[in-house]
Length: 539
Image (cartoon, rainbow, N blue to C red; front, side, top):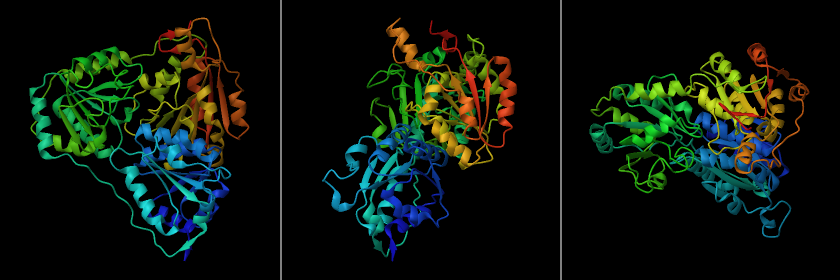
């Protein structure tokens, strides 16, 4: 006989879980006790939002559910931001939430929450395990749900008395999710549409891509000469250095690329959804029937035809479709990709000179040439990210960024990446507002001596909001300024090395010094608040 907490720990180990992110809580002490002798690494974070974002990023990196554990009530509400990231980003994730005892329900007990109601709109499935004997069954189903179709988050509530109950059950086998698969007939129909096209465009996004699928996509583009664009914050799916790359369809889109999408006579959307940001506010395509011929490939059947009615809808994982299409006889489109890539190269050639003594244009201009293509680059939300997405030459596996636009994501995501592979260099870009949402997690990076570099872009304002405020309500500034600490001194208080950049010419040497640190380091950029976007100032 074993406790529910020990059984759950054994089930997580059987599912291949290597690491769990948590803020400890008394409501699931029996599970923590079960993990004491487990090979699973338990990372104690400083806030449940950070734990959930680390788990979400871990799910992005592995393709299997990232795991977070939080306590009942406020622990769960704090974690909701990370669950929302997983939902919008189509990331497999499982949130384990300690829960009040089973006899306490419905009495407004201490920290009582109905998690089905709370998470029902942002999780794929919410369940409460009320019988310890059902832990293997329910956890197995949670892994299936999190990884199947369009991946997403699952929330499991764990009553504290259930975790102390004993039972005689064993862990089930590791869950493996495959498919759905593209049929030969579907691939042949798509090939026929390509033969009839004159200006096709491939657009890729979403999740459930692996290294083979990314490689096959490159082969498909090279064989056909079709340019490839990526959706918002999915820039790791096609190398920005490839001569067939057309750019990213996201915020601050290249006007030439937007027109290319409008002028295409066939768009093949693989894995993505053309939601608000990639569709430019639902303006690139007519609803419900686009002017362009549309092939939509997606692993979640509910996403096909959700907004746009495709000419061919294919319920398949991206790799299956690309592999099946490569088996067909395909036409060649000479000149399309080179023209698209030339427009991309022109758009991203050199960041326009900014204002102030430290400018994002100079910082990113040097940074993109200095970094290794095998690094990980994480960021949250804010105008500082515009320079990253436009000018950095992303490669496969480099980008960790939330399509949900969640502030505070960059540092927790970078921590997850640094823990996942200590041989890779990891950078976290964050604005001053973005960083202070989850900055306390820097303690985790220091505790584990992670080789993680924070580039902190400090302009003293909530920049994106101030930019819109100045546009919509000129001269009426309110609530968008910040009084910030000395971030370098703050980082040193954790035992990290930190540097402050006071002028552009200092950045190359300081970046090199930060990268040489055996442990976490922070680079504090003192930016001018007016320098709000490439080639634009607020005033």
